[in-house]
Structures are given as C-alpha cells and as structure tokens.
Length: 90
Image (cartoon, rainbow, N blue to C red; front, side):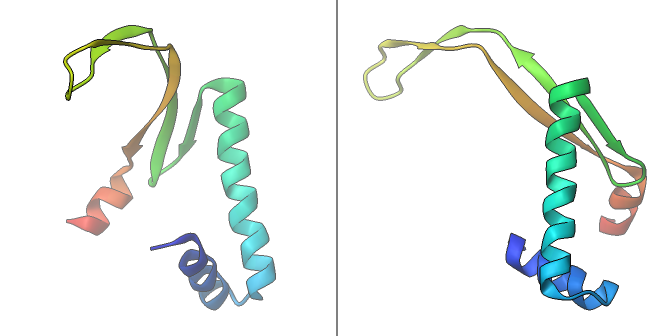
C-alpha cells in the first residue's frame, strides 16, 4: 500500500476529506520521527514499537571487487510488530 492509498483509506474509513486524512497521516509520521529523535523509541500499543538504534562504523567489502569499504556510523530504525498487528496477520 502506498502513502496515497493509505490517505484514501483513512479518508473513507474515518469520514474525512482526503486533505484532512493527508494531514492526519503526515502528523502521525512527523510524530514518530520527532519521538525517535527525542526519545529513541515510539510505541503505538497493539500496533508496533519503533526504536532508533546506533550502529557503529565498520568495514565491509565491495562484492564485485572484494575491496574493503568503510561504512560510516549511522542510526537505524527497527520496527517490532505489536500483538494486535500480529494477530491480524495470522
């Protein structure tokens, strides 16, 4: 499902205009980003937990040439599905 399809779904199921649904989806995404930056973790009970994890710099290999490549330190986001989401998919 694309973001546009999600906005359409939210609009239809919540009785909102597409503009209002788009603002709601954007607000949710923005809230998750802000929470990850500030606290490093966002939990939406029953749905998912988003966590920011620091990854150290490391040396990898270019698969074509076998040459070593430096991979810089970064922050990765992990997502763990909540119980309601898992139940809905099984």
